[in-house]
Image (cartoon, rainbow, N blue to C red; front, side, top):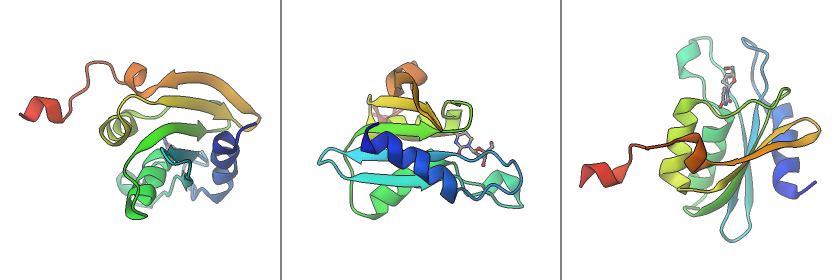
Length: 126
Ligand code: THU
C-alpha cells in the first residue's frame, strides 16, 4: 500500500466524529512529494463541522503548499467526497487522481474532474 493511502487510513483514527460516528481520513500529496493528512472534525452545531478532505487541503495551504498531485480518502465503507469537498478539491487541485479507500486499502480510483463535471470555477468569473 502506498504512503498516501496509508496516511489517509491512519487519519481515520484522528477523526472527531462523536455525532455521526463516521470517521473519515484524507491525505493530499504535493507536487514535490510531501503528504499531508486531515480528518473530519465535527461540532455540536453540526453544519460547521469540517470534512477530512478540506482539513487536509486547508492544512496543506496553511503550511505553504499550493500545488497538489493526488488525494486519498478513507472511510469504513469506501465513501466518496461530498459535494462541498468536490468543489474545494477542484478549486485547489484541478484535475487530479482521487483514491477512494476503506480500512483495507484502495477500492476505487477516480479523479476530481470525474467527480465534478461541468464545474463552476474562476474561469466563469472573467
Ligand atoms: N465527511 C467527510 O469528512 N468527508 C466527506 O466527503 C463526506 C462527509 C464527514 C462529515 C461528517 O463529519 C461525517 O463525515 C458524516 O457526514
